Amino acid sequence: MDQPSVAAAAMACSRRRETGFETMSMSVSDLTGFYGTPLGARTRQVLLRAVRRLWPSLPGNRLLGVGFPFPLMEQYSSQVERVFVFMFENPGVIYWPHSRPNATALVDPGMLPLDDCSVNRILLVHALEAVNDPGGLLAELWRILDPGGKMLLVTPNRRGIWARLDSTPFGFGQPFSAFQLRSLLRENNFSIERWIETLYMPPFRKDYLLRSAPVWENIGGGFLLPFAGVHVVEVGKQLYRPVLVRSPAPARRIPIFLPIPNPVGRAGI
Image 1 (cartoon, rainbow, N blue to C red):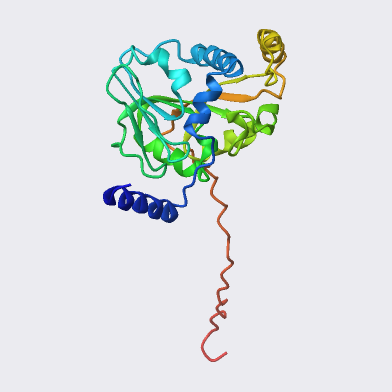
Image 2: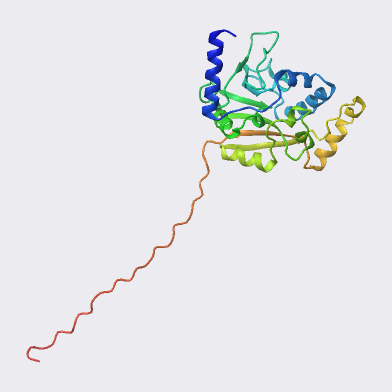
């Protein structure tokens, strides 16, 4: 490694220590390898189905992917006005798209290099659960999201079996229950608009078991079972935080004691 690269890496590590940001996820080669397996391909199909329900198409939008969104954002790359991806030191960064100029960048999750209100669509995949300060990352995403824009999060469900196994990408980092994710989003001024629970199928490795994935999804989604592997949530930017208005307390009446004047008598009496 040459001297400038060493200096840049040292500065990046120092900045992460100052901001408190660290990432906890599979490496980019492991993520790429997972989605290249039969289980990964089936997982991608299930997630794509949920994402397309919320975002059928994005013509003319400025789309930012965060984390490792490539399996879900290939469908939009030819529709949008502009597309780019922010990745973190762990898992790393890759060149994408392969047939066009690179649109990926390695960034600090707490210091995103974009102006305020500069994008109107954000897609988070393998991102929110991978940083030790998800609130800080959400604050930065709130800053760069256009007031009329939307953000879509794909995060592991704490109650699902996928978060309990480190043989898949959803078993790394910090999973969220529905209550935790809802609270985190509201604390960072995002309004929840639509919510889908998906990935009910267990992480089977055998091909003949993977073919049962549609059955699992239909049963789990139809009965709204609580053990889905992934939350897929669409949120908007909340510009004004609601303030609880309390009725004024009644004024206290403090008695005032006045002297009673003596009656004025006649002269000489």
